[in-house]
Each structure stands twice: as C-alpha cells, then as structure tokens.
Amino acid sequence: MYKKYQLINESTGEIVGEKSEHFTDSMNDEGYRFPSHKAGIRLFKGMPFPDEMTDAEIGKMLRLSMVVIGKTNMLGYRQGQTIEAYTSAEIVELAKLRNRQGKTFLNKMLRLRIMQRVTTNTGPQYYINPAYLQPPGHRLSLDLFLLFRDELTGLLPQWAIDEFLSQARFKQTSQRQLAEAERILQEG
Image 1 (cartoon, rainbow, N blue to C red):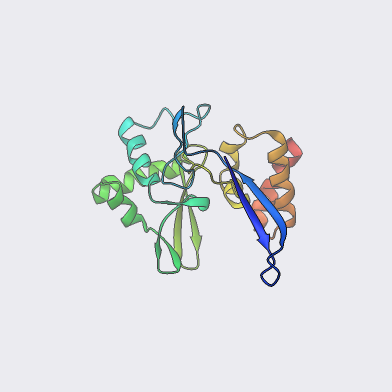
Image 2: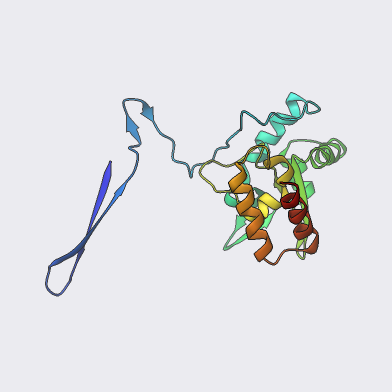
C-alpha cells in the first residue's frame, strides 16, 4: 500500500512536489498485522532461557516485560512528562511475589543476567536483557548493547558488533565500559 502526499504552494495552488510512502497493509489475505509499536515482546529462537530458570520464573519475566519502557528495556512507567524506574519492591509486587520470594527471584535474575541493575543519581534502574525479551519494532541502543554485550554477541552479526564498539570509542562512557569494549574488539 502507498500513501501519497502533495506539497502545494498556498498562494498559487501549484503542486510543487510529491512524496510517497510504502507501508504494509494492516489487513490482507494473510490476516491482520499487529503494529510493531503495540505492547508485545520478541523472543529469539537461538537464545533459550537459562536451564536454571523454572517455567514459573520465565512466566514472571514475561509478566514484567509488559512494563518495559520501549527502546530502553527499563522496567518503568510514565509519570507526566517523565519516565520513572520501578523500584525493587515494585518489581516484586508486579511479579506477584511476597517480599522474601521476590528478593530471591530478583537476585537470581540479576545473577543469570536476565536483568541488570544500574545505579543512577535518582536510584537503581532495572533493565531486561534484550537477548531474552525485546519489544518488537525497537532498535537496540548502544547503551543496551554495552550493558548486555556478552549475551548479545551470539545474536548479532559481526558488522553490527563492530559498529557498536566503534560508537563506544567515540561516546563518553565510563572507563570500565570503554575498557571492556576494547577487550572485545581485540578478541574479535
């Protein structure tokens, strides 16, 4: 399907340009295509959950994936014009666990690198590893790549890894992230 735009000079009425845009029809003979910006999650066939995870824990991670902030994979919510990170207590509540069970679950997900905790000036933020759960239609950012690079290396083509590492050299990142990026580049 095509969408056609005309650029018209308001004073003369003359058509001064045209633009067209191709997009996939939402409904065709094959059925309905869900828009990529709608809530959902992408799983990668080549990246199974760790054997150490129970089916119940995988289910809890799927539940938590519904509150991921799009491009960042951060567990959070919108409050007015800002994005707020869920606290560990709120994550435990969202996973429908009691305090002690929730703390054990959260620590296990951090240990298995299904999630990462990043300390910021406003408090900790929790991110879901995009190698396991990735919102559809979103691009992988440099920051998210650096946070989960070990798991993502097996999923991404080498040229994409090289590009991320090149970007990391030019971006102001912490010394630890830069040193790790250099280590990976030298190994490649």
